[in-house]
Image (tube, each protein chain N blue to C red):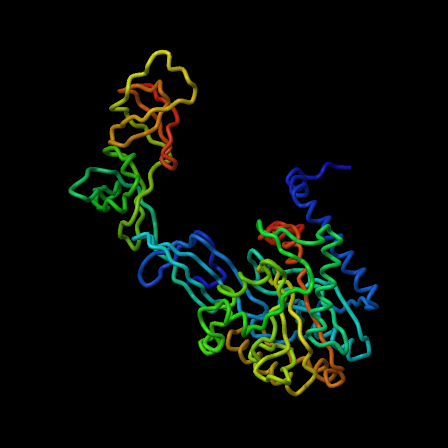
Length: 312
Length: 187
């Protein structure tokens, strides 16, 4: 056998601990879902029509696209009669590269029929606690020299309360001036999940994406994000099952995308047709790479991947 | 023109008529939100720093910057005069623009003058210069503590820390990036 190339040898030595931890993490995630009677599924990575989203651009693959998430195919499986499904797969997003972003990354998505977003927060908490235990974190995680207490239940705070607590600008003003994202990134995110994990929930209806609007308060959508140590790890929601409303949101997003000269996707008609048959359900996407950053106590996503695009 | 995806640490941009260098750069994107490019910028003329967040739709003008070899001639009032080696034109920099480089500038030394739209705004020195020690405490015989240093004055008037054995009249080599003594130079 040839000796490995010297550069690769040192490279591997630096990454081997993170690689072993990632393998254990994925193993324990699989065990959790299998024990909870979930079906592990695989859906195509190359798809003809991704969900049009205002701020996520797909990478073309021939005349089709690489998936930005397995969301549409997985919901078709839900509608077809699979009540509890999960998938661990690669997703691709154009022009996303930074300390916490890779254009190709690993996503865990799972869906449960008859769940709402609060049920999903409970389950997400239980799943991650089991996963953290499997890599040796029982009571707390040390993140950037601070201890994060993992004791359940984790904090849950609405977007409105978080803005009232942490932002110098009111939530309604950030929406009017279209500086919600800037304010979130600068003032809110760095304060979330610092002493214990935090679910940020009830997003403004304008930012609903594929989430259901809350019956008791139509100004918000039943959507949440999980933050640990200021890192955004997961996004989940009670699924929108109204096909007409979903089509309107897709059309609005397509308009915004066209104005930016982004790819024009065909409308995902088969998805919209099956949406009529989707029972009430909830789904969540969790970034495996971000979770690894937390576990490896690093602010650089490069540290926990085998090879970044620049290494290839 | 640059687009937001060109932004990175060290990139030099023209904003509101002034040249800026990006000193810190961070790509962020909240869940389902838009890509944001957070930067810290430093004005290359007055040194002022500020933070600014850009969006993917933003465009940027490159700053027209280049370096030119010139010779340091003399100081006149609070201005430093340099001569372009090619066309013999003279340009001036202020004390603020020359800043710490003054510690290592001897007459006729060749330097790089940074030009922004043909206006001189800064200077970069060779990494190493040789200067004559003009004032030094004599070396006390028996002072053999290794690593001991003493301050001496060099011909530019600057004070440099050197090993105790260096004496007046000797020539020493200095790293201009750190201000550190490297070695004595013969002759």
